Amino acid sequence: MIHSIQTINGEIAKNVFGIFFDLDDTFTIAGKIPSGAFQALWDLKNAGLKVVPITGRPAGWCDHIARMWPVDGIVGENGAFYFWFDEEDHKLKKRFLDSDEVRAEKRLRLSRIRDEILIKIPGTAIASDQLYRETDVAIDYCEDVKPLNQHAVEQICEIFTKHGATCKVSSIHVNGWFGGYNKLGMTKTFVQERWGLNLDTEKGRFLFCGDSPNDEPMFQYFPHTAGVKNILHFADRMKHMPTFIASKDGGEGFAEIVGELLQRSAK
Image 1 (cartoon, helix red, strand yellow):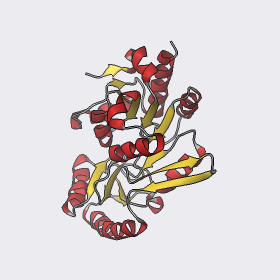
Image 2 (cartoon, rainbow, N blue to C red):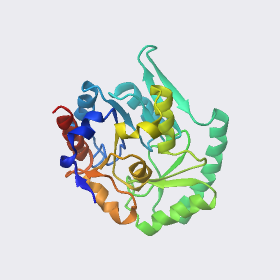
Image 3 (cartoon, rainbow, N blue to C red):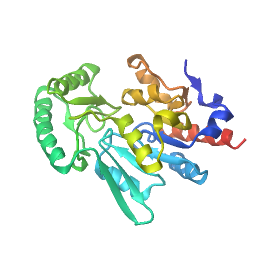
């Protein structure tokens, strides 16, 4: 059973050390960031909490976000890397799982899969952010193309899987890559390397916010999770749902979640 975010108790809220959150349709709504969602980041930072987006979006976006948003770092491309801005050195720092050479070889293999998908599944397109990606291929099925049905999405996944690639379905893209990495694995690495914490023993001190099936491993792992209202669109395809849910969609729901958390932590 999912509980309203308004029922989160003060003990949980006071113990939260940081917030991890997805971007698309969790932090945004209709492709835009509501003012309340961005203000919520500053509210979290001003309250002394750690703030880290966990996203499938590309390295180019993550470069900007790590530099210019009030965040402590970002995990991108579904766990292929994390970036953070070093305040002492005044430089962006990058931590990739694979070397430059390995990433180049994998991109070549992925380009062949990309071409097969575009030929075999009409209506698909390469995601508009593909030029800024370092490690994966993103197939657009409803962001800048006419929305495709679930069968088409499953066909995309089948082609990735046939070639031995990992794939994940977000609310807008199907992302495919080679390697065993994922959002949760790189989040654990980030927490250990940046803060010296073992996430397996400290996961109760974090809240994860998401909206879609590719967030499901995070919902399963963290004891305290929250979904924005639009996650209900995927409820029939998910085994692991968040603990709490907002009454609003996307970024407005994210702002609601943060507001409830900070209100109860202050009591």
